[in-house]
Amino acid sequence: MTGGTAIRRIIVVRSPLDRSRGTLSASGLVTPCALGRAGLSGRKREGDGATPTGRLRLISVLYRADRTPRPTTRLPAAAISPHSGWCDDPNDRLYNRPVRLPYPARHERLWREDHLYDLTVVLNYNLSPVIGDAGSAVFLHLAAADLRPTAGCIAIPRAVMIALLWRVTTRSYLDIS
Image 1 (cartoon, rainbow, N blue to C red):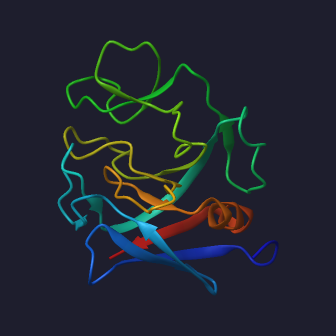
Image 2 (tube, rainbow, N blue to C red):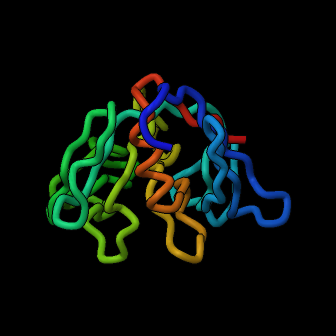
Image 3 (cartoon, rainbow, N blue to C red):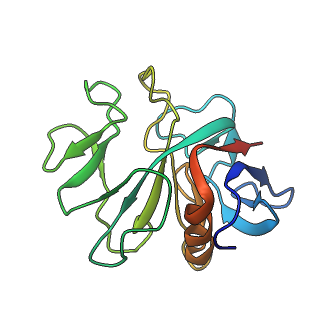
């Protein structure tokens, strides 16, 4: 799945057999995906382990340049560094925003050893306006080989991510149910 028409809608549906797994489909592509350890929720809260349901736009791509080249995509893309983080402290003024590490409030490190954030799509969950304790750092990122659950993101195999990035735009969205 390279080149071709832009993908507008990406559907994510939870598995009826395992709440932390699902299927992602877009323009003829169908692949298993990992979801949050608590499954899906229409009332996501910070730290609950759930993936939020609804329609989430794709905003931008973060990538680890020492492990992967800049992805071919129509989304804005930026390289991360060892100082890249994302604030997940609902009491901090930069809650659910990128931060430079070290950072005094609670945060997630984007520069990881496990490769899961080597290619990461920032989704528009709880970004505008930011609502305290409604959940943060909800991304579409790379899956572990065993598709183990995420903390609330959607995770897909690397080959699928590369194929999707080729065809998505800022008008593309995930429809999660």
